[in-house]
Image 1 (cartoon, rainbow, N blue to C red):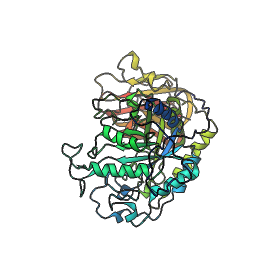
Image 2 (image 1 turned 135 degrees about the vertical axis):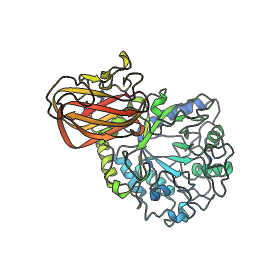
Image 3 (image 1 turned 90 degrees about the vertical axis):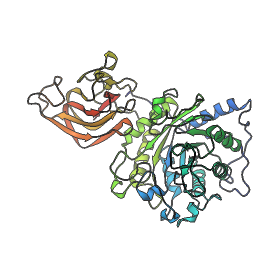
Length: 504
């Protein structure tokens, strides 16, 4: 990891994006948004206009992705077979807390889940009774969020599941993405029309293609949305990229626009025949680290209320977003009462403090230190490539290997508090452990992954598959040692590690 000095400027206010005609009676952003002219989508002036918009979105840098729906209460990522909207049993909602926390974190926008695959709408839609205003909460959450965003100077973007699970009004799609995906293009258009004409300016729409297109292909979807708001960017997490101006990165990482691996494991699925014309790259992942039971993108379970990704790891990816001109949408799931967890608020405030103080990240203690490996693929994949602080280099084990190890010699005993394993280019690990030589007896390189002779290797953490190829672990108690190992006990292919980093 290279030291980066961040020179922050004030977040620029994006202008000129709301050129659609608002529906009669719209009061969502009354007094805060002035409609201005924008060239029509497809016109000769449009490419220059949308390029300027791309720079405005880049200036937002990072934002809060709010996922709050049926899955908050089911404890599962996808929630099937819910017929009664009272399943959404939220006891309250505090959109001011969401927007205020985003502001404190130095965020520029909130990305809000309007509808997941289960079809439950978080706004007062006229298209269905499967909506939040029919649930016990009885409030238009999106309208309240719009007001909170305006109050705190936060921009608004929307997540929208294109398709829905098969149910009344959404018949099964012929040749759909999944057997349970439904299709109703007129309802899809009607819902998008509401969202883009009744809730003020929308920075971009994050379309989830997991259960199909909903019956309206991506080129037609983009054209329809841009007929209402020409400045609204359109993105699809996978599938055909026709009409998309923003490359979405579900479980992605910072990286150049032309690096498809930075967009995460789903971005290459069904890319379509039309070459992408992305102007901007986004990436997103949950603030929750990997855990057993409960959801990831939504609020999990009360027993996980203490779990959160480290402040330094989030700040590192913020810096990466700035470096590459990305935007970073950090997912945070409100709880049953419609509030962000206390640990999330504290973490985000701490990241905001680092941003405001232009903090420089410390290099890992392992960076540039002598590193050996069980085997290597070739000279360009030597062991030291995993400890050089450069993401784009990586260690690779021998071509036929499905296990292996890396050993780092810190030279002198160092007190380590945090361990990072990054294999996001080729996430193959199935089982691993990180260990240290307890007595620091021999400062030289080790001989095998099990330890040699009387060497006393002690594990500090063990794990299975590394979710999205990135493992960031705060040790329960600091450990002082000179020699450390990452042992890949099994992998679905040749082990390949971008970074093995030890932090004091």
